[in-house]
Length: 227
Image 1: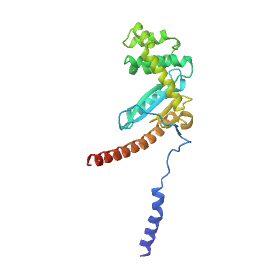
Image 2: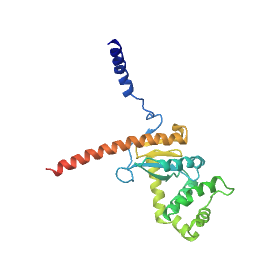
Image 3: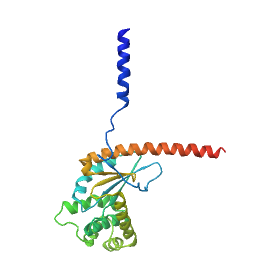
Image 4: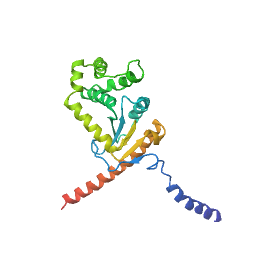
């Protein structure tokens, strides 16, 4: 009888401890809130994850293997994209290179090659012609590349990228932005791998919120239809 009572007491006392598990990551310490939250550009039910980066950023080149690893195993609820930062004129050239490759559907071939050219070769990409010559080896001609790089679409993307990076409050690269609400810097995370662990935590949180919101919206729609 006494043993049974003692066991019950231990289980009862330990229950609150089991329920109150510590949160692995803390706002303000491991990630920051974006105020105001920004609109996302993803399919319904998806959580947007953006890497703010630059081809002129050595840290971004070093982080790319971790980006590739995470993308292969990212949560099904996540939708990933890149956003080039433009902190100075040389970085604008790099951003033009990114958007030119994107416009011509070459980005899967050129992304790592651009980092390699800038940081693993004796001749970094210093001019628009350098980008055009490199990208021409992946299925487009120099004339088309040059025209696209200076065209309306790329100019518009550059303008929008500048506004978005500023709205996200990003001041260093690489930085991850989760669903327009949360900012994860390499400084706060401590490592590239940890950045994506924090991103996974925030993706789960946002996915749960989206599912709950969708449930409420669906309930309200059914109630309205039944009137």
